[in-house]
Image (tube, rainbow, N blue to C red):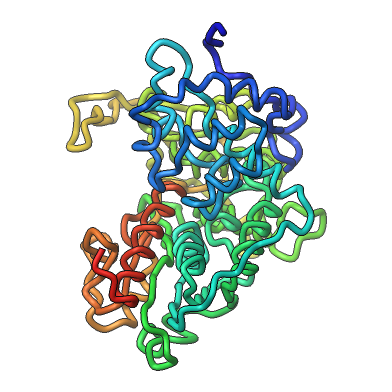
Length: 471
């Protein structure tokens, strides 16, 4: 059979339609397309794709099951390694991980591994009442702080080994960044809810509205009988540029903007939480979060949305697919531009003018790329006399986040680095006995799949520590 050189296209909503709704952009493969894509896999003996997966899914094995149309068998293979297959199939950067190692990709486009994982997971989830075998309990109790991808992965792996796992989530809905940070049009919340429900069926207890560091401390968790604690509290502290005008009304961190829209449903006609709708919006940053914020602003009714990024398109860190989708939807990319001030309205003659203090624009300077910096990317340098103003009504700062500082400030003996990340060894063990950590709480903002990988490593180490295993 001749090799099909390109991936089978992923069907999507038309750009003009999807730009004004929150329904999922990518529609997923049908069965015939999924099988045809699976048949592109060469089933390499050395399995390079597996080395590119942070949770080591046996990719050729699940694809082999798909070739046979044994989709439940494929799901079983995936879930041996991953607790969140429907999530990973949608938001993982496969192009820089498993697919980047695909042998077929040397001459042709790599196999659409993420698209196949999504198909298998969705097919399984469509089955009502799929039976889940609850493992025999081993008598050990573990607390998980945070219900994001690292926490859910750690919880799932331990539950499968018979541990009594309790997940503590600060917000009112489980899922962490998967529910507050990633928009509905990329990751429908029903998908996250389904994955959480699967973990509950395995015996995982999920407690929401519990803030570890306020409601309970890590030390109190041990006092309550937990034998190990995994901290997966994420990177919820937004970074700002520290430029004039960032305190004006209409300036948001991306965390706040996306949380109000995603978790608090500010997109509804009569929302219970306020958010800027309509007008012109500037989003500062070039990562996936910036793309999410810009595309969300468009769907909230913005007339014009700008991405303001200080480097060129080649250095843009967002996934290429997300950038392409944003361009198709009409997002205006202002590259090699850096904000220097947020401008606001002021009426000195009438301090009660309701327009006072609101954003009216953002002043930027054009940039040129100079010599490479310590990251290896060419350093952006301002071009003298190149300042200009974008007329906008809201500004979203999406330049990254730092680890949540609450737990480190309330837990004695927990060592952190200069950026606030919890220091761990190769097994995820912190400076405290039987306290483990992983994901963004350790690394700062990173990918969903890398956080899952950290949760998986920590789960194995917790099992070893509590069970007395030597291997």
